[in-house]
Image (tube, rainbow, N blue to C red; front, side):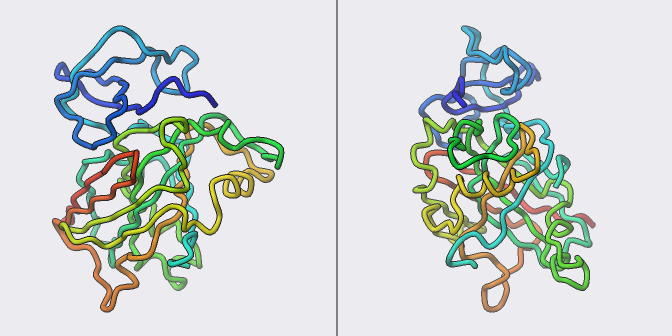
Length: 267
């Protein structure tokens, strides 16, 4: 689909009002304090969503989507590594960690935002026609709830705690992101580089993912698809380097930006 933006930022202005704005060619995560032109319409799926002459100054960068139908995660999709709306969090928001969320891990992921409903995507159709844009995601995971005795072999329980899917800082249109399967992806924990990969290491690319998950199933507009994470997660370090209270996880994807979320353990 043709997006009406290059880099879409959702933010709170100094007067407390929430807006969508155009961040332009700047992809750096430090958007606070910048004055940006505003869009009309309530969300980017609105037919009246257009750039206006009005402007506002960013006081807080929010999750680029207020809510989504579902967050879909693609597992083991990098060669070297062989949900629901309440999981959303902002790009710089603290992540509350419940006492039951043990063995906490990070997963930096290129994330797709679906722009219009997809079902039975054929080989002749261009998947990019269904993509609103791309964003950075952290598929926060409690590995304790991922093992079969507790999860029944399903990964969903490990990744569906509140705020376990921070995304942002912007949604970048397909035209502005360049080749989405040629981007550098890096993750740091407290400044220590943990993941250093590229999206060209994906086993199943974006086209294959969209065709597969839409077989006989309607993927609603607004759905966020996390495409998988590169090597370097805590679970496979020796010993496993689980996230601790106060740890800052930063994830940056080339041409999109960086998110930074502190893990705050609940007492």
